Amino acid sequence: MELPNDPMMLYSMINMKLRDFYSSLDSLCEDMGVSKDEIVRRLGEAGFEYNEEQNKFW
Image (cartoon, rainbow, N blue to C red; front, side, top):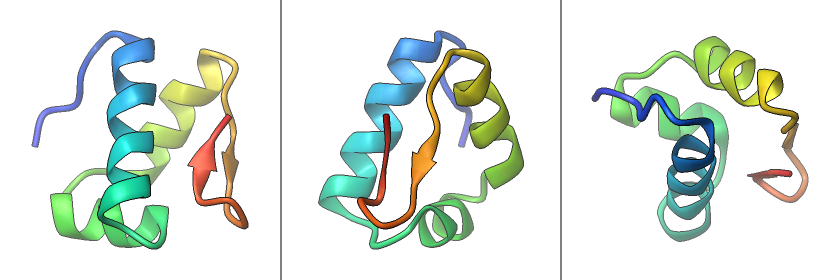
């Protein structure tokens, strides 16, 4: 799957999928065939970090 280039679109898409379909970022990445490191890096550059306990970026 190709990830959105816009950081806010990526943030919105990832959090929606985590909320509605996946219990962890690892399971999302494995199922969708995307790089966890890339998601964490790109969202980190936009000021977001993943909270494993809450299963969302904020």
